[in-house]
Amino acid sequence: MTPPHETSLDLRSLDEAVARVRRGDAHAFAVIVNGTQHRLVRLGARLLGSAADGEDAAQEAYVRAYRAIVDGKFDGRSKVDTWLYRIMTNVALDALRARSRRPVSDEIPEGLAGSGEAEATAHVSLRELDSLLKDLPPDQRIALTLQAMEGFTAKEIAELTDSTEGAVEQRLVRARAELRRKHRGHDGTE
Amino acid sequence: MEPNEPGLMEIEDALERLRRETDRVGARGGFEARIMAAVEREAASSPTAPSFVDGVRRAAWFGVPGALLVAALAMFLAVREDAITTDSVAETYAAEDFDL
Image (cartoon, one colour):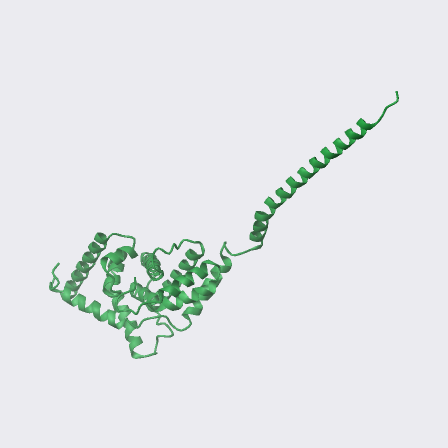
């Protein structure tokens, strides 16, 4: 499951890399990281509202993925990239639930600060996205981000979040209703 | 909820704008090296990584059945040798003339 508007991954080389890692070649994991890192970090950043938190979440997701491959827990029934997205959404869900204990990282990543107008805009936009979605329950926030930012369908989101299509659609409706309520509150029309 | 409901279009427009503006967000330089370092640490600390204990266990896995086979063979040969010796002694006694 590759997000819409994305160039397709070389899935065969990802599968081969998984097989090599399973045989004990840890270096082959670099092929998986290289082929998926941009999308995975961006997904983490959008889910958590910060590039630094996105990178940390992606690192945790990759370590969990590596451990699962070595332990033989990845059965290859789903595509490698879909499986990584699923791990990433779980990591993000854990991070969002723990957020009450730890505030959002306000750090501007070194590689991003002052490296161009587009990057600076991206950083500000991530903060704006976080501010927009911060009052939503984590499951609604994840569903809305996966749909509106990454272009996944309700059925695909259900697969990524181990849920049902109906439950995801309900989360999306509730998330939009909450955003609308908040928007009206800001406009003073309520 | 109708798509043209007041407020909803503004929200959809804002989400679409934020999607475009965050499209270039990605990993910084050195991210892959950082991940591979974490993976190598994980590989080193993993209980599945080969260790001295694993070596002993692997040796035992092949060594114990081998030792049992050798012991069984030795026992068989010993019993067989004992039977041959007994028969041989019996034949010697049988061939002996005793003058009483």
